[in-house]
Amino acid sequence: MSQDQVNAGTLAINGGAPVRTEPFPGWPVFDDREERLLLEVLHSGKWGELTGDKVTTFAARFAEFQGAKYGVCVPNGTMALQIGLKALGVGPGDEVITTPYTFVATASAALLLGAKPVFVDVRADTCNLDPERIEAAITPKTKVIAPVHIGGQPADMDGILEIARKHGLRVLEDACQAWGAEWKSQRVGALGDLGTFSFQAGKNINAGEGGIVVTNDPELAELSWSLHNVGRVRGGAWYQHEILGWNFRMTEWQGAILLAQLDRLPEQEVVREKAARYLDSALGEIEGVAPIGVDSRVTRHAHHLYPIRYDRNRFGGKSRDEFLAAYKAEGIDCVSPGYVPLTSSPAIHRSIAEMFGTESLAQLDTCPIAEEVSRDVFWLNQMALLGDQRALDDIVSAIRKIQAAWN
Ligand SMILES: Cc1ncc(COP(=O)(O)O)c(C=O)c1O
Image (cartoon, rainbow, N blue to C red; front, side, top):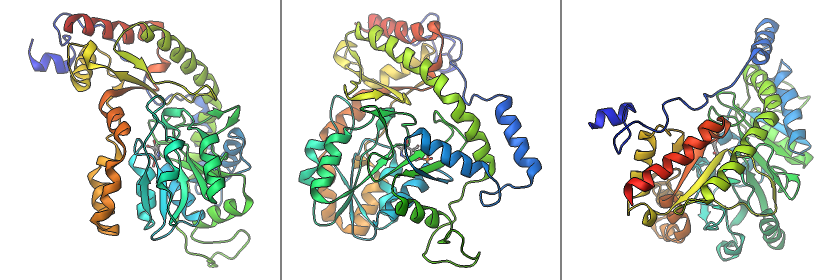
């Protein structure tokens, strides 16, 4: 078997036919609802947020969907994080406590405002920020705790909010992967002071790009609105800028798509939840692969990612990445090795050293669990969970096949 054949998927890595030759469900999913709404925007001539009604309608509907009073749409989740941190008063020299097992934007948003991300390790069972380690990282400069609901599983918001209250800190939820997720029957996003969501192309709600800030606090909502609209105030003159802000306004095209995508989310989440339950039990029977645990206080998981912990000792000592190469050759291509922890990110190292001095790099050695998770865990993406029963069975049997070949 040549490497080309393996790459082309015509042969499984161990020889013979791959377990799966059909593709997994494609993404995005859309129908005439998106088409109708897009055409409505086109013909209205109102293509920007300040003249049309799609963005503002979506902002109100999505905020309500998350159990929040207010929503401000922005072009992407990264900008939502920047607005959120800025609205919470984060500026040069402040510290933001967060997890290293996340997308770079959670930390870069702080750095881009001149603040230092301070990384606290994750819980090995859930891969989410561990509240028990937060207090040791608090300093007089700490302003915000920014948990991430990774993969769609809410972080331990009871523990995080308790510490924040005790120390007078604000809480920003990076809920960029957690549309509809619930902690103890309450939707995430506005459990803390403010939350952010992403609608980027791979996300369960997808407008190509998109983001939103949600909150229950009217002052934070107004400030976020002003920050996203070049410092304007509602009802003010066009050239009246009361504070410095950005043009982080969403287009009506995005708003139109999002209205249709939000309608479709609940039915897709039922399918993802059912698939996750099936995989939990089927993979639970295979030694060496363990679905990441879900905290019993999580009453709804958004299932953006389905993370699986891999134990090389049960696979003939082969690394997670060798396994993923074999898995892909078996036709299971809906997988990712996942994040490089931000404590190992060259961009984060460089900017922390430049902005705060090399002595600040010592804190990047304090998250061994995140390092281990990044080495041993891989993800199935959300599209895999939209597959039919045959697709789910292929996901399981390819693992069994590889394991049998390597042991
Ligand atoms: C946890 C997390 N935070 C922030 C972001 C940034 O969102 P966006 O890609 O829309 O800028 C993402 C999306 O990739 C994310 O997954």
